[in-house]
Amino acid sequence: MFYTVKSGDTFWSIAAQHGVSVQSLMAANPGVNPQFLFTGQTIFIPRIPTAPLGAGFPPPVGIVGISQRVTRLERTVGQIEERLGQQQRQIADLQARVSRLERQP
Image (cartoon, rainbow, N blue to C red; front, side, top):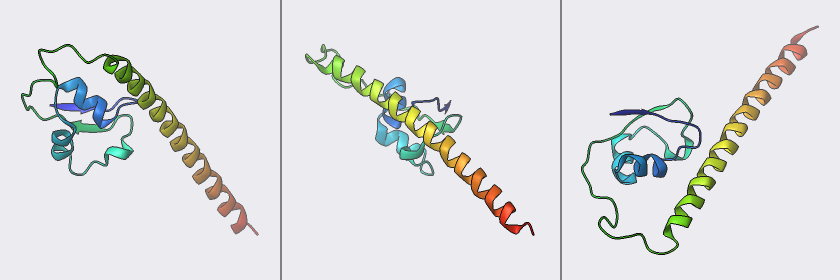
């Protein structure tokens, strides 16, 4: 199954959403750098039937809160990466303008 990356997604969050391991997600997408996912990118989600970690048992105390904090942090990192990408594009545009101006007599 194919999946389109959304803002704030990470391999960890995508794997958790689809019930696959991060390792199997990475193996199914060898050309994708998990550190540089971008919004709109298409990746492949493998169909590997696995039971969720700790299936049949309630989560240990504190794990739910940690999971929510990790999710919030991942979204924040995604937003920062998105802003960084915008700034890098702006820098490239400015460099191109400067080059054009330098070439003018």
